Length: 323
Image 1 (cartoon, rainbow, N blue to C red):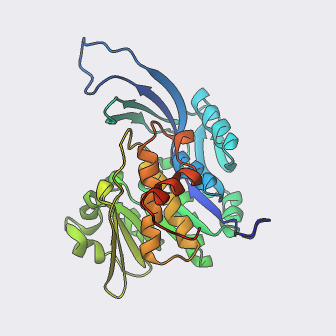
Image 2: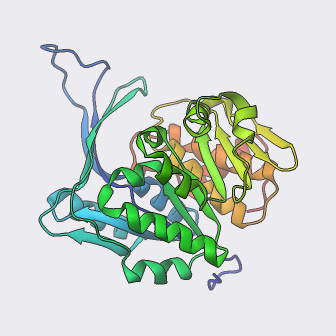
Image 3: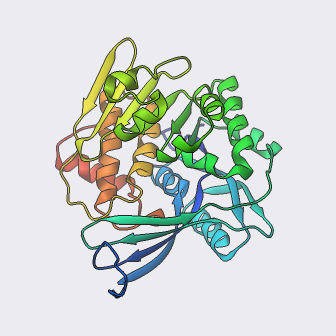
């Protein structure tokens, strides 16, 4: 999509995984019975795909949320927060009488965190015709494995991914650890609609039937998948593509305060760099820098990095990327 500025304004559709994060900052983990702590801070933020959506907006992209959410207090707060951060909620179905996916995030002073959550439940929404219109008018589609844990939107999510593939719109998929709970048939439908996979080293066996390592990850490069990005945390990331091309970029040494939302922020930067047509080496560096900028901040949602904070990481290490 072409905006009024000299740079393109990409429109990204994110499917599902709309979450209310109640973030509780405490002195230390683990939490133990009868040992009480005073919480230093409570915040309510859009978690899950909300992190990705806000991060993309802060990189200058037009972000559109598709998904379902309850009509409870948490759901309304998520919608308000997304809109306040420049995200379109035109594709969000707020179901009457249902609850929202909600997660309590405990974060301690050492940057450790624990998630305590439950998925929203409601009747299936099928495939809303508005979703087809929004997908048709975008530059890329993103979904995660968490999306398919909400059964009410699973059908619409898969059909949206398939529709994007039919139109030649790139589909980026982050399986996440919950991918292991999906039926094999559903998992295959998702992979057959994905162009790029963004996964951690620990998630490789989930998609390969138990095989580990980069060799196993490379075996995922089957039509239509044309790139696999293996996220390695502090070690950076490795991009695999054909024929037999491997590009690794080390992580950036920065003070870590909280790793929450780092992967979602990484994904937004990765897609932006991909759409900019950067070579794999620069895509990896750009996405790593976004992740490094995030781990220096506590919280999710509105706490994801800005473009200036990403650039600061690159500048401090004298890495030049023309974006």
